[in-house]
Image (cartoon, rainbow, N blue to C red; front, side):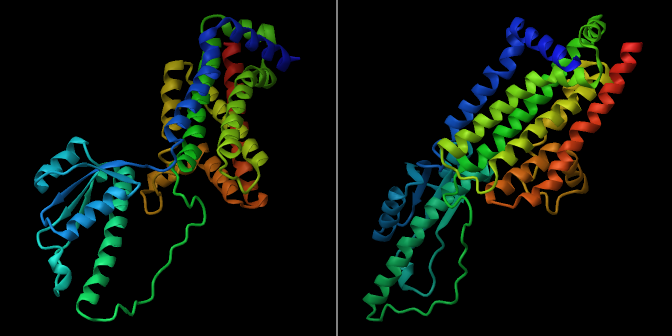
Amino acid sequence: MSFARAFSREVAHLRRDRWDLAMVTLFPAAAIMIVAAMLIAAVPRHLPVAIVDDDHSAFSRALVRAVAAAPAVTIAETPATLAEAEGMVRAGVVWAVLHIPRDAGAGLSRDTTPAIHILFNASFLTIGSSAANGIGSAVEAVVAERGLDVLHARGLPAIRIDPPRVQATVLFNPQTSFEWYLQALIHPAVLHLLTACVAVMAIGRELDGESLARWRAETGGGMAALAGKMAPYLILLAGWGAVWLIWVAGVRGWTMNGSILLTLLAQALLFAGTASISAMLVTVTGKASVAFSASALYAGSALAYSGGTLPLTGGSGFARGWSQVLPFTHYLQLQMDQFLGAPVRVALPTIAVLSAYLLVPAAVTALALRRRERG
């Protein structure tokens, strides 16, 4: 049987070639462990910030104490001037700066109050805004408390008529954890890119010299042999995808409210479709170098254009179009839907799309291989 012969032949190659074996064993394991170790803290804590105190009052000292007690930040620097603090932000020494202007404390008892400024490094938007939010929460608490003290000092009742408030409720990921958010994006994207490179490596190896003729003679060629050739790699990579899901949902406890089995099926289809696309690229072009470049282009850009990191709504037509062309975009939508508990019927169109990414390029690859065998 062509599938079994091709499968056995590829397994024998992996036993001989330790570098190719490491590509689908050690490298994915290292990627999972490194990313997991980086994000296991989940929520940023003790981000270094600076405070410029031009007021030197009891109010400013209360602000400093409140910021020092905030778990998200730690006061790393207390520069004398705002210009010096801005230099620290540019140098990466601190992520945000709290500037307390002169007479800020005395202004609480006046009609006008000097603005308390929070500056943060938006070049690193996530970590900079996290530091700014940590400072802002501490400042707001102190200002509210001091405002009530001023009313008491004036002999006024501490009663305020508040306008209607808007309450924003976080439905999922209430901890705003980077572990859940980023691991759900990074690990499938890394395995997606790795699958593309492995497929080019495996097929490109057979296009070198007389290897293609030997491969056909030993396996029988055709679609079955092609599937058998890629099966060992896809089994190993899909296994690492399952390890990642077990780590996130089983060990770390980030609940998947939908179907884990459906997510694993979609992930296997993503990897199979990725291998099919990259195999098509290398057989059509006949050059592994070109196929590696093209695979890096579509698989390497997948995370950026998936809509998971940056919103595509309102983006250019090219960005939205390229996003819909990429298989990772469709997989990620299904995965996040299942994390949130979407019904299975919502995922069926995506399963069909991912299946098309597998079948259509595979058919083109088989035709291209047949022409090369005849040539």
